Length: 134
Image (cartoon, rainbow, N blue to C red; front, side):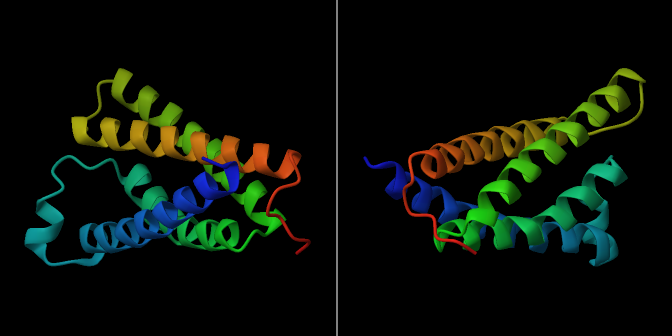
């Protein structure tokens, strides 16, 4: 499978993942009392980060789909910022604060996805595939 095809698939996943992240994060932050209660011991800074990042997931995914160079750097920034928030979550957990195990799993999934997407995008950029000057 060509790198550009893999990148397009990952970009499409990023767009859908971002939309779902905004929806679920918005529901947890701004939804009914029942919706807010369903998140359990949510870690506020992680919840707010993920909700905000969801908009950038959509933007970066669209940019990668369209072959824009800036989107490679956006994917790298998302991977880096997710790593920092995951690290902060680790300190939060080690400090004995309340959390949900699904939050740890979700952050691991997000970090893995954005690291993989950023690496594929960077590789495509370095190989001169699909990217157009922005």
